Amino acid sequence: MRYILLLFVILISYGSLYPFHFSGDLVPSADFFIWLFDHSYRTTRADVVANILLFVPYGFVAVMTLASSRRILFQAMLLFIIGTVLAFLLQYLQFYLPARVPTATDAWYNSIGIIAGM
Image (cartoon, rainbow, N blue to C red; front, side, top):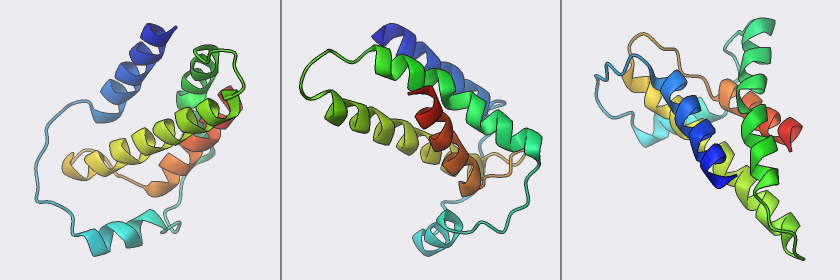
């Protein structure tokens, strides 16, 4: 199951960063924190649904990889945090893709998709 989870991470990353034409300078950290909590970007229902559905398989397979133990809640929270960090990292990397419009809101919806999958 861990290999399937890795496959989903690779597919999500590929789809989020394609066509891989990176350019630009680093985004200053002050601007990053403004971007992180800026929800003024308008988005369509289709975009919201797509962002949620993109991470549902990650959440589902992540739960399937958990070993049955007393620490299952801790492991699930850790996998949720890892998935959320991945979502924000992919959105951050889209700053360097001129064809993409990175929004933190998309990453928040990705996190909802993880929860839905779990």
